[in-house]
Image: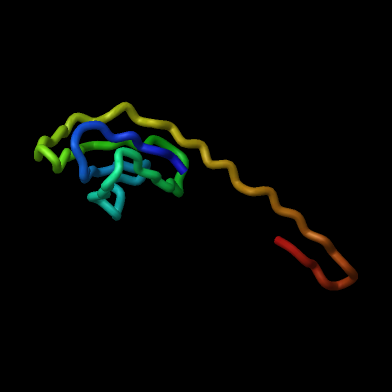
Length: 87
């Protein structure tokens, strides 16, 4: 998970761009100045626009992209005769 810190007067609404294009959940909303985002794919993520709903100000300038590296969980298997357990 990644934490996005928001400034200004909330609540906020914002769009996130993923390695595959705009996030399907756009626009994201937050009532607090921190938002936890769960990414699924490795690559660059960025906030492409944000609206400070307290003052209705919008910033359409893309933020610095964050590179996220996802490392797959290890797997193991155990063979017992003709039966294999695990992945």
